[in-house]
Length: 308
Ligand SMILES: [Zn+2]
Image (cartoon, rainbow, N blue to C red; front, top):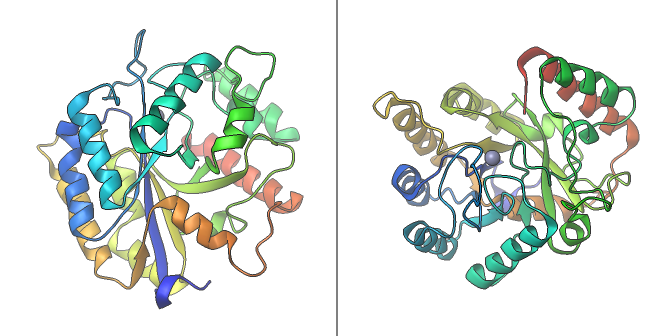
């Protein structure tokens, strides 16, 4: 893989906005900026109108909104995590995207489904095909988890698939515990012809909490990523901080400082995914056997550790 300007590997973070507030994440972004590690931050444009699922600020919180605007000016990518911290009908998703356009001057290029949002795009059991779908359904029902989502169902009040196809380029799908995303998703970003409302999917490394996040970018992992010349897209939850007096956040910052001194290309996720699409030999449609292998791998991970 040819990375930007002769860099040896590429690295980015897609940060899930769950539990994020100006108070708890602004200093982490200041550190990323100071290290020259520009990443992707998801947002909710609208405040919740019923019980929130996880908590966290939205673009209706003025200090947070001004800070997110500043992040955009500094070169961070601002992405979409659905309208708000609970399910939203088509009408509310449209309103949220209009607000996003109004604030940032463009639509989001990247979207990551928030867990349990009914408007999730090809989410739950629809993430998988063939026998894997039935296995996943059974597994999730045994765990008491919902497997049905409606973002791609034209008969549902939560449908917004046509809007997603029109305005969003990249949607996050599978996550894996490996740092080198390309080792698990060699076709990224890819189009799946069975899921026409999503232009391109991408996978990421699981950073469910600071433990898995720091594991993913450990010193050993960084060195290996460089040796492999790979790409690491971390799906992080920077606002989900343990009550440890700031130790986990400090360790994360230390690892980012180290990483930033290596000859890597640090850019927002969409920029890196655009670069992959521009490579000679890249094909839009994923080959069925490559997709099957990836689905099995993710499903087995889900059975073992409950991967997102
Ligand atoms: Zn979320």
